[in-house]
Length: 68
Image (tube, rainbow, N blue to C red):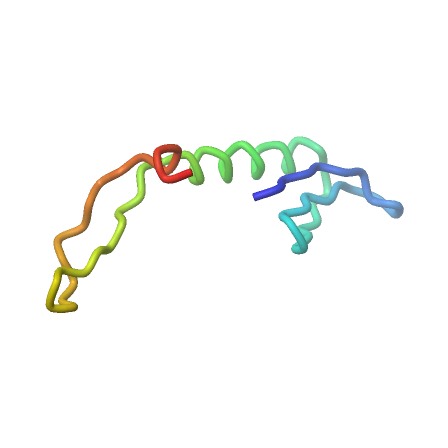
C-alpha cells in the first residue's frame, strides 16, 4: 500500500492511501494515523485456507511481511 502525507491546499494535512485520501487538521494527527496504520499492516494476520474438500481449515498464523 502506498502511503503519503501531504499538506492540503486549504489547511491541514492529507494522508493518501493509494487512491483514497483522509484529511486531518494537524500534521501530528496525520502522523499518528500513518504510524498506527503501518503498525497494523505489519502485524501478524490469520490466513484462511481451505482443505482438499473445500472446507475452511484452521487459520495459519503468519506475519504480514512473510506474505509479500
